Length: 240
Image (cartoon, rainbow, N blue to C red; front, side, top):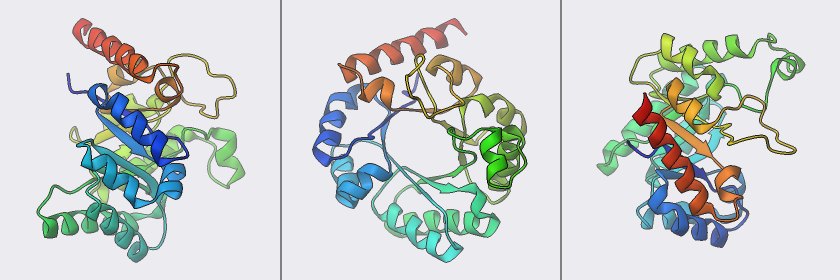
């Protein structure tokens, strides 16, 4: 079984991030660099993780005019990240520009293009939150709408909550990769994620990648926590 775990390096310093990478590299499929770490450590943290041979998922959720997003995606591709995010709500032209920039930059560098992932609806949002910003209060329908938009624009992957995976698998091309945050091993006090499932549940529904932060990185022994999740996933796959 390919290791689907993307450990979320949601830590404030490069030293903490690199310590986690060294601990988790043997039991993680890759590492997510998000806004907190990137703002603190900059592009150099991506280079240092890549120098260790690890897969990097750059989760900065670009959302701007098409030309600006294209330039940001090109810069990320030059960092040799394997995945990056843009907001699908940026619209068709922005999404097309992002995918084109990823492919053209990678071609110039002679490397595989990063997987541009369209973010559908954040896992912290529910129907009430959508209503507050003037959208139809139906998370599932909004996810489907944005997923279809991203697919038609040529994106090869999406970010969605685990609770939308099964429905998206029925409507999207089989090759579309689904990256799923909101993964929890159990209840978490003060959790800001609303649409969550366990790792085994998400993978069984058709997720390709599982973004896992607190259950691993906040554990007393991060490597042991990751190993336990990976073993549970392997057991689930063997039973299907």
